[in-house]
Structures are given as C-alpha cells and as structure tokens.
Amino acid sequence: MRKTTEETFADEIQHPLPAKVRSLVPSLGAQQQRVARALLADPVACSRMSVSDLADHAHTSDTTVVRTARLLGYAGYRELRRALVELAAVITNTQAVPTVGAVALNDPLDRVVAKLAAEERQILADTASQLDIDALDAAVTAISRARRIDVYGIGSSGSVADDLAAKLMRIGRVAHAHSDAHRAMTSAVHLGEEDVAIGISHSGTTLDVVDPLRTAADNGATTVTLTSRPRSPAAHYADVVLATAAAAQGSDLRSVSMSSRTSQLLVVDCLVTGVAQRTYHSGAQRGLAASFRAVLPRHQANAPTDR
Image (cartoon, rainbow, N blue to C red):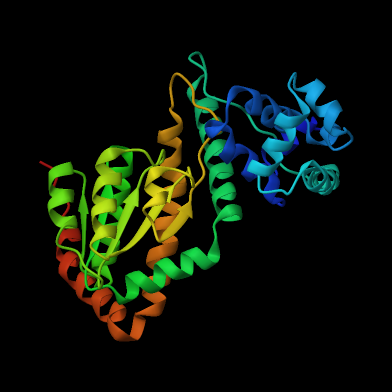
C-alpha cells in the first residue's frame, strides 16, 4: 500500500527540513503554526505552491509565510520552497515506516509500545540531524579541560543532569549535578574561568536552571545549554548551545517535556563519548578502570538458594 505524504514526511530523516519544522512549532505564534502544520501535513503539495497559494492554504498572510520561512533559517520563501522541492524528491523515493501518532486513552499496550517507539526514533533522528557538530566539539573541549563541572536540571531534566554528572565522574571528571535551586546557586557562585556550567532545560525558561547558569557565566565559567528552544533565556546565557528535539506537540498522557528526555540523553552520550576520546590517555582510561573495579563487587551477589 502506498504511504500518504503525511505519513512519509513524519518519519523522513534524510533531509533537515522536517526536524527544523517540528522543533520550531512549539515556539511559534498561532498564525505561523498554521504555516508550519501545513508543511507537516503535505510538503509535496506545498512544494508546488507560490507564497500566496501557501498563505491561502494555511489561512494566513503572505507576510506570515515569509516570516515563518525566515524563522526556519531561510532567507525567504524562495529558499524554503527550494528545500521543499528537494524534500519532495526524497519523499517520493523513501521507504520510511509510517508514523503511528500520539498515544490515545483507549490504546492497547502493544499499540502504546509501537507509538512510543516510533516517536522516540523520530526524536533521536531529529536531534542527530540538527545537532551542531562545531558546538558539540566546543562543549567537549571545554569539559575536557575543566577543573570542575556543574550540571543543572529540574524534573525530568534533573534525571538527565544526574546521568551526565555520573558518566563524567566515571571517566575521571570532577562533576556534580544540582536539582535543588539553592544548592545550584551556592555552587555556581564558586565557579570561575577554569570551570564549566551545563544547564539542561527543554523550555530553556526554568528559573532554577537559568539563574545558576547566569551566575556561572557572570563569574567567567564556560556555559553550555541543552535545550529544545535555542532562543530561550537559558540559551542566552550559554557560550555553547546544543539543540535537542522533542515531539512537536504533547498529549494528555505524555507532555512534550517528557519526550525531550530522549534527545537530551543522546546529547549526553555524545558529550561523554567525546570527552572520553579526548582524555582517554590523560585520565579517562584510568578513570574507567578504577570506577569499574569500585562497582564490580556490587554486581556479584550470590543467587538465593531454594528453601
């Protein structure tokens, strides 16, 4: 059976435009969202439209279409349409698996598993396609040289912050995660030019992440932000911004911020792997070996005997 354009587009990972549109949707105004959702619904049809045609199709103005194109990183609609034509050619030849949509209240568990797996595959693909490798390299370099690393995160981002700090410690870095606002601020005031502060926030507006990040920046520390909103306050106070993806919209059962954890963990693994590569002979190899020896006895409990 031939896939619909919408189904194919939703899982297309060979072109950067899908990830750009999905990541931008939550931060757009109502008029611009209509343009973005028109692109999501049928990029092949949109690739054949003039700016006025797309404006009529999305029930908005030519100006809004052009503004949306610029927010997506294009100089104007002509450049966006060129990207749409390229994407349409990819869609025509792709064999991508169709999306299965958001989880519904009456979905059986096998359907829940299929939908979440499809969503997380797409989030990972979007993150990989839009991740700035130069920014990633800058973050890896800063962490590799840092005297001390602070990581700030709240809620689901807090568990990601814990994961990042724990993995950095295993390769010999001095890293601490802070999910308490007072402790984060107390730690941030003691950072300096030899240190790195990393803020993790899907929205980029969480005060308990933004405030210590700003304090660390004021004290001269190198600051890094993992966020789905590159124009957010957390990004404003970052020397390095690592963009993460999330679902374009949430549901009653799963918020957008919950879905962002998948992409955050991918970026965390990229950071830690990069730092391990960069410091392998100067400490990472020794740190990995020491941490392995330290925890190994904790994984060798005897099995209980039958009574």
